[in-house]
Each structure stands twice: as structure tokens, then as C-alpha cells.
Image (tube, rainbow, N blue to C red; front, side):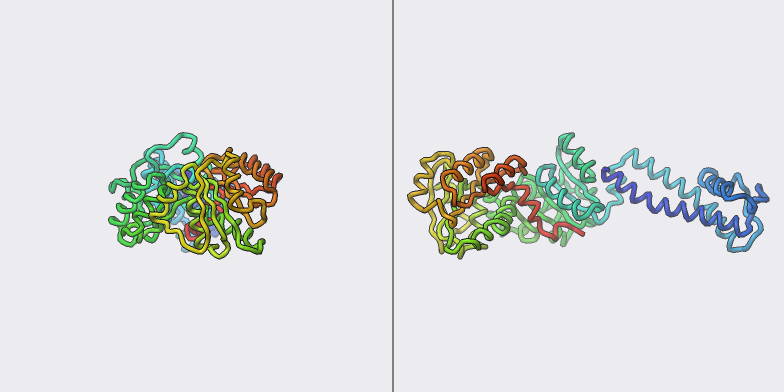
Length: 415
């Protein structure tokens, strides 16, 4: 059911209760001895007839029945209430339906309060919506996109009850239509880093103090680190999806592995893109005393480390080795073998390149060659196949979006 249907259903609740109250008041009045001028023996009619009279109030009011006569004063007052309330409710329902049919989005947004605004129609938004709806099925959600595929829109609307609005959230006129001042949370989850910061700037300039309710995703780690000292970054809660996933990987998987081994461990990072960088950063923050050495393998390892070292300062306390090469090349692993004992319970290999099939294939080869090592292979989306293969071969298969959904902060999920 889409958000409009949900909103309409919620609106229908009070109408249903009001209609029931009107009918109860009218029947009570009739049974208390009140009659009507055009149906003088209405108070003596059976219940089905009285119910028919009550239903007619919503169509023609009391025109067909005449005015209330006889009976106690309070009972006549109840019937007069039903006379006025029934046609008013019917007219209001008809008007609401008409306005919603003519301009449903404008009508819905004009009444929106305590809602969540999401920027971006992408996998990150879907992951957030999945988690949100597991905890809160009723909170209104407005999803904003500059363009959206029909299939994605159908999933957002019918699967997660979102109102989908097409527009540019960096335009002040459009932003005001979303009523952000009344929103509980604003999540800027787009993949265009600069546009997200621009949207946050517009919002914080328009509405003082709204920054504490803004969650800002930055797709580029270098950009996020470079602008960390800006006003917008300080006022809003900024994050990178790989940071969130890496924090979950370390907390949920690697710390348990470290606890099960006596000496300090060797961590081999296969791939040093955004995921590999954030895994190492989280290891430094959460498990520095558990690491003896970190070996970084990447087709461009030295350059990537130099770039990462601009903002992510590597700390002392463990050895670091860099190897330029492909994780699928056995020669690379021969060079690793010269540096450390791979076939050891105190060695854990994290294969985190963007090539999912290569990660899994390399994991299977490493398991065959080094049966004692711990192995983690990364996918982007949850893969039943990769999970089954991992279970059969003692390989931990993790997906970025699975880790994200498991580690979304509780304060992002408005209860």
C-alpha cells in the first residue's frame, strides 16, 4: 500500500469513528422516544428501519425525515447533532477525495507532519527503508529524486509506503513544499557528494537548528575528510556508507576472531578502495592492540595509500606492508607468504575489492591453499549463492548493504 493509501486509511479512521458516533447518537435518540415530523412513528420502528433512517442522514441530511419532535431534550439534541454532523462529514469526505484526486502530492504534503524526508532513489535508500519499516510501519516517508526508474518507484511506493516526489532539493521553493521544519529526520542519501552538502546548506540556512535532524551521506571519502571542518559538516551528522559497513564488519566479525586467537593477528586486506580504507581505519580505532601487522594488496596499493594518508593518518603500533598486484594472482600470495605465515589461525584475510566474483574465487583458492586462515569475502548486495558457498567452505560472506542494515544507528530509526 502506498503512502497516500496509508495516509488516506489513517484519515479514514477518524471518519469511520465519527460516522459510527453519528449513527449511535441518532439510534439512541429514536429509542429514547424522539420522533420526526415526516415519520411520526419513527421511535416505534424496528432497529433495521432506524438504521436505514440514520444512513439517509449522510445523503440528504434530515430533509427526508423532518425535524426532531418529542422525547427528552437531551435525546433531541443528540438527533440534531446527527442531522448536522452526517452531511458535513459526507461533504468533507467527498471534498478530500476530490482534492486528493486532482493533486494528490500537493494535498498530502500540505498536511505532512512528523515525517521522514529521504533524498535519493538508490540502494542505500532502500536499505534504510527496509530497516525503518521493520521498526515503524506507520511513519510517513517522503522520498525525493530528480529522476527515478518506474520499477524503483513502484518498490518505494508499494513496498515501503513512500510518497515519491520528483524535484531538486537544492531549490528553496521546492524544499519548502516538503515541510522540512516539521520533519522528524532528513536523510540526504544521494550519491552526489557536493549536491548532498548543497542541500544541507540550503536546509540549515532556511531553518535554524534543523542540522541536528539531518543525516548526510558523502559518497567520496576524500571529499568528506576534506570538508570535515565546515559549518555544515559540524552541524549535521555526516557518514560514508563504507564507514558504516566497515565499522559493522570489525565489530561483528573481526573482534570475535581476534578474541579467539592468543597472539596479535595479521590482517591481509585484498583491495584498498573505499571499503579497504575504512576497514583499516576502523581496525585502528577499535582493535589497534589486536593487530600485529597489516598487509595491503591492491593493483595500485602505493598510490592509494598515499592518497588515503592525506586525511586518514596511519597510527603506529603495527607493521604495514604494501603490495602492488591482483588478489587473483598466485604470485602475489607467494610474496605475502614471504612476509607472514598465512596458514595460521592468527591470520585473517579480508577480500574487499569491488569485483565480487573475484573476491569469492580468490577466497576459495586461499581456503584450499591455507586452510587455517580466517577468510572474509565481500559482496555489494546480499547473495544467497555466496552465502551458501561460504558456509560450505568456512568463508564468511558479507555484503555492504547487509552490514549497513545491521549497523544503522538507532537514532536514525524514529520510533
